Length: 425
Image (cartoon, rainbow, N blue to C red):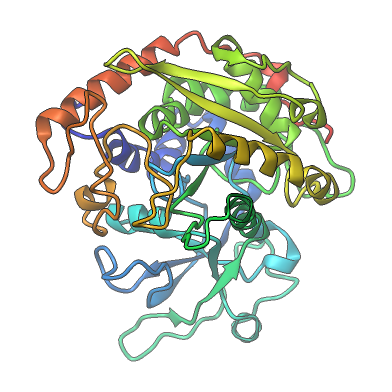
């Protein structure tokens, strides 16, 4: 890896084209395992009309309809130094379901726009207003397998410009509610805690599906399950070979990782089994049982000798298992409160947000998508040397070198195929 390119920037350039490269460059008679995600069909997509990074932080920009397309893989959403990371097994494909067919998906060919979208996306994605969606020909026949574009008329400039609206996601709104509940518990009156700034969210695998499914669901016959070969190949490629998640994890160094669903819990526990230093969770142990104790993951030694760790909090899936999530919510907030009272996470009274973990980050200025709001908090792993206001190249190189050393020391990660199967929630 080029040591001059920070990890968080490097991942933008690697992840965005990843699925397309895997699917187009492998032998035609031996399809790459990641081509599985194309079995989910095609979805209404858009691009920004204007080239380059948007001038503000809104993901709602003047946009044009690009037709039905396969989807881009996803990188982490939010600030790369948010101290709380929410984790699922792979991104959710809401547009697969009839009720969300008016969802539209970014089809950027511009790395700045891609970086901007995932940095500033918070609790919403984009959709066509329902009335317009129907006007363009949307409805029951507009399935992921129809491959028929909506009939969006071109304007005088030949652009099929579309109106968009923010489509709040229940999952992300629930993340915000957890932050608000923590602030209430801690009596943080002037807080500005928000998803995207204090919570980032990502996945162990970068490509989307409506469900991580390893066996046929008779109730939804159109839903394509993975074969064992596909599942194993996807996990080996994305998680173990390219290490997209692990690289982001070590660059972020979150203080808390919230893991949602039994399926994600099993895969995470199995893979990081040797790195747990407290609580020692077991594969297939119920979420209810996991919530009864403190569980800590060792991320690695920092240059000064301190050890970076993350509190692991397991939770039922917010939308997939809402009854169990509601029953567990108080216990989740209890554990967040413990971390706040122990000063593992701290509120910065000047910003209203949580303090950033140690380590460099230059995503926003490097990609020219915005100013870093936390430049006075961002320090090198090598000490209290600040990267801002002028980025110190030698510190970035030192940080990246140490990050890759930490990643290599996590090389004892284990792959057990059955532990990545869909769990019965």
